[in-house]
Amino acid sequence: MQGNSRTVGTNQTGIHDKLDELVARYRTHEHQRPVSEHTQRAFEQFLVWLGDWRGALIIDSCCGVGKSTATLAMRFPHARVVGLDKSELRVDKHIHYQQHTTNYQVFRADVNDFWRLLRQAQNDAAWHIEQHYLLYPNPYPKSAQVQKRWHSGPAMPDLMAIAPKIEVRSNWLLYLQEFARACELYGKPTRIEKVATNEPITPFEEKYLRSGQDCWVLQSY
Ligand SMILES: C[S@@+](CC[C@H](N)C(=O)[O-])C[C@H]1O[C@@H](n2cnc3c(N)ncnc32)[C@H](O)[C@@H]1O
Image 1 (cartoon, rainbow, N blue to C red):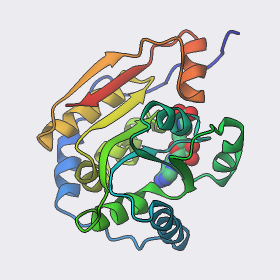
Image 2 (image 1 turned 120 degrees about the vertical axis):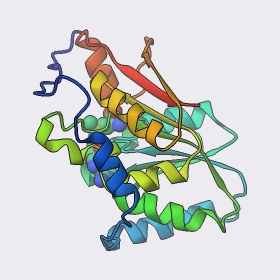
Image 3 (image 1 turned 30 degrees about the vertical axis):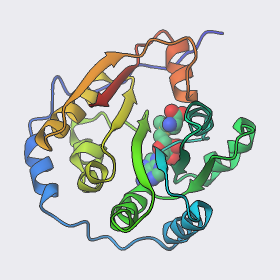
């Protein structure tokens, strides 16, 4: 089946000229926004679900319907895998992608808050975050929207603190080039490659690949 997804339209021709300044600014500012009640509740449910788990945790942030969460859970049976998305509608659709494996769970939560809670909890926790996936985050491609992108917004310090390894995918290469630059400012080396697969792991990836678009993957190492 052919897709008809449009390519990302942007008025930016290269890495945003305010990127370094924004990364530096947010790095020294504590995230002030109070944690929303629903994410606090989700975090408590997450801790109950983990119970006395002492092993690896894999986070799939902005997981949408959680197809990737289920796939990652099958791929990494040694770990507990957690899918997070703020959209109730998407999280509720997860049932269609459910896999017969018990090592994962999808929660409705705002990752701005959830990442902060993970960061606060991880030092005293028996579990450790092994890998963080951020697959096809909203690109906010207009130049004026730069602060809405994860790497140049206030959540970046938490995002950088919670996992040693991160994988980000996008159909907008410039998004990942900016992400890579922000990681570099945090001292985290990364590489970017083209996604080469016939088995897309998320609905957005499937949509872009079917439309003949290139998808890209950034991995820290
Ligand atoms: C473009 S979709 C990608 C979904 C999925 N990863 C995929 O590839 O099919 C972006 C997702 O990010 C979620 N999202 C955006 N901001 C979020 C936030 N602050 N907290 C949690 N999820 C968020 C949206 O609800 C949406 O499901």
